[in-house]
Structure formats: C-alpha cells, structure tokens
Length: 426
Ligand SMILES: [Zn+2]
Image (cartoon, rainbow, N blue to C red; front, side):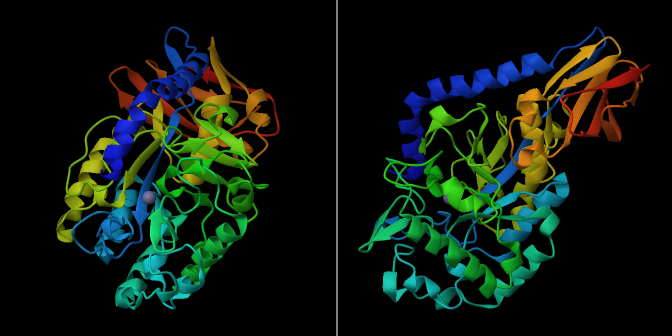
C-alpha cells in the first residue's frame, strides 16, 4: 500500500475525534475574540504558515520496494529549478516557506557511512553520484534568498535502517512514538549540521523541526529520560510542526489545542495537507482549515521543471485570499507565525464602544519565545477609523477595502502588561 493511502484509510477513525478537538478549540478562540459592536469587529487573525516537506533529495525515485527511501516519489530527478520554485512561492506571497529538508544526498564526504541507522547502504554508503555543481548552485540560491526559504530540519534520509531493512521513521518509532535512542538522535543531528557545513550552509542550521512521517512524542516517550523537544531546545530550536492526528503521541499533554509548549518548544498542529505526498503537476484546490498549509515538494513542481511556475502560480492564487480575509493572515516567517498563533489562541480581545480591549493574562503564562511581544489585529469597520493608544505601541496600520467595509491591519507591540486598550475615532 502506498504510504498516503495507508494514512488516509488508517486515520479515518481518528479524524472525527481529533477534528472535534482542534475544531472546538478554534471555534472557542473565535467566539471570545469576535466581540463586535454594531459596526466594528476586531480579531486576532489566525496566521497560516507554509511548510514544504522532503526538500533536498536529488533523486525523486521511491525505492522502498528495495528497502530504500521514499524520497519524493516522482519519476524525475530534482534540479536547481525545484529550489527556485520554493523561493518563487515565497516571493510572490511575501512569505518565507519552511523547507523541511532531507540532507543525505548532499553528503560530499560520505560521512553517513559512520552514522548508524542513517541510510540504506549502511557502512557502504556512497553518495558520489549526487556530488556535482548543482550542490553549489542550490546552496548559493538558498543563501541568497533567505527571506523566502527557511531551511528546517526534517532528517538525513527520512527513515531508520537496521540490518539493511527500512522502517519508519528516523526520529521516532512509528507505532509507539518512542524516540530513537538519545545518542543516535544526537549523532543524526550532528551529521545534519556537518553536511550543512560541507556545503557552506553551516550558518543556516535550523531552529525549526518537522518530524519525518510525523512520528513524534510530545513530552518524554516511554523508556527515555529526555524528550525530542529538550534535545532540540539545547541546540537552539524554538518550534516543532507536526500532524497531531497522524503518528503523534502525548496529545493529552498539549495545552492549547492548536499548539502546546513542550520544554519551552512551541509544537504546532499541521492539520491535513490538501494533496498526497507524491502528486506532481497538479494545480491545487481546496480550503486551508488550520494554521499550517502543509505540502510535499512534488506538490509545487511540474514533471517538466521549466513549467514549475504554473504550479507555483496555482498555490499563489489559492493562498493569497487568506491574507485579505478578516479572520486569517499569511505569516511572513515562522517567528512571526509563532508569536501570532500564541496571541490568536490565548489573548482575549473585545470591542467595547470606541475601545479595543486586550487581556494578556493567558499569553503571559506561556513563558517561551512566543511571549515575544509583536502581533497583529484586524479591524473591520464600515466607517473610516483612526487608532491611538497609551498602553500598547501601534507600529503600523494598513488598510484593505472590501464589500463589507475597510479591514485595518494593525501591527502591535506590547510591553510587559496584562491589559491594554486602543481607542478608535471615526
Ligand atoms: Zn517527509
């Protein structure tokens, strides 16, 4: 069975209960921040972050029938233009997509032969086939377009190999969610950094993690004395994004529905992707339901790389409207995403005659990087408004005319306060 078919059939039973969970928390968060007087609504919009998995393979071939990797499951090799597609999507939308990166086929020195369980050839690991000028070209492209390409940790070769047999997945065991032994996890993280160094990308060592196959435990897994989040935190990571409905364990410990804080690391629910992992050349359609627009590399590409832009354009058309709606916004980058999501879920907002009032009591309790103090609100009004405040900094105000009135988007910076308010003048 193909892996996504398996996901689809096996996750059906789970879908109702877990959808219910994230669905109700989303509704609850909307009702307490949607207070409106007759003419004015104020909301802390849900940020949407774009994440593209499995970037980094040079072959696209699924070799799982021979105990090899899934890769991207397409019938062509990857080319530098496929990296350009990620950057083009970012540029067109003014965002920094997260590229969840796989690095084994960037290994110039075959260091993976000495990294246990990292690859399908074991001690005989030989990547010479994929060492060529394209590595430098792609690295240069990534480095010179950092505003539109966030290199996130996905893995070395995505899975786990033992005595030549593949199993899922690299960072945690599939069914139990038990993290791989700490020493091995550390070795894989070291190797990820080392391969970045080999390619002069060492300064881009990531701060964000997308577990391969979404196999992950929130908190400490059975038989271990440290969590994946703790290991990552000690290396500077602030944020994990994974599917809470797939091979996710510890959901009972997730504090805020759409996200939890695990040893100070924000862990966010990816929700459902619109396309299966190996679909290529398809103009996307559908609705983004949660905080993440997740996809796989093949999903923004075309079988003919010269036509990649046709698919990228399809995503731009699908995603742009989320920036213009009152209820949502596209996050400019993953840091903005983390802060905005924290405020969206935990900060209370109400419109009380000519005032917008904020209550940060819950937000202030988060105690992680997400308590950083910048966030956005959107205000819908039929009348022209001006805004002033003595308790919170209004950094910028932009406007968008719609059929229902004008949507104001305010960038705010809060101090160390529990409450604040903004005065509106018509
Ligand atoms: Zn993946």
